[in-house]
Length: 172
Image (tube, rainbow, N blue to C red; front, side, top):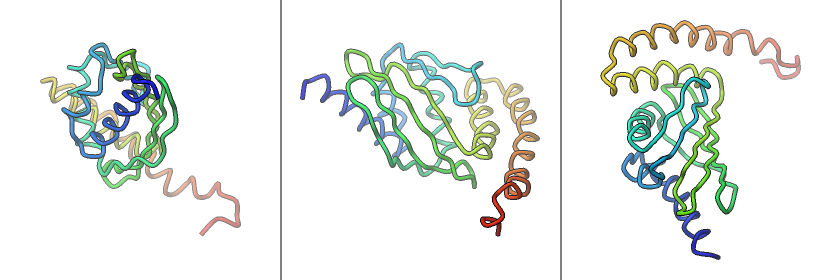
């Protein structure tokens, strides 16, 4: 195995351990200085650089609890990681596409999450927390107020309406 591949594997292992332990400093140590993160919630939200990622990870590790990775695939400069966790009382699963630079540091993170009730729970916890960390309390309150009805509708629909669409043999 070449040094770069070994370093890439070590970076990914360190990233996983940092996320599972909620260790922001260890996670940031895995990142390139010009890292870019694409949100799973909107195209309007991108984070760039380690300073922005530090704030995001601090908020994310507060909002997303009990992270446990269950699957990893990839090699060279691209890896896909999958974990299960909780956002409040909602079960949450996330896929992360990581791209590494020539120094085996993470340069790009693209996130994908499910199910929808967990994503809306994330909207009302992570977004406002990140805005508060940036000193934008008014925006934090606005984000929470605008996302709360969406979360209520999605959660209610998931519990009451979606089960009605299951095949008759699966309804309980």
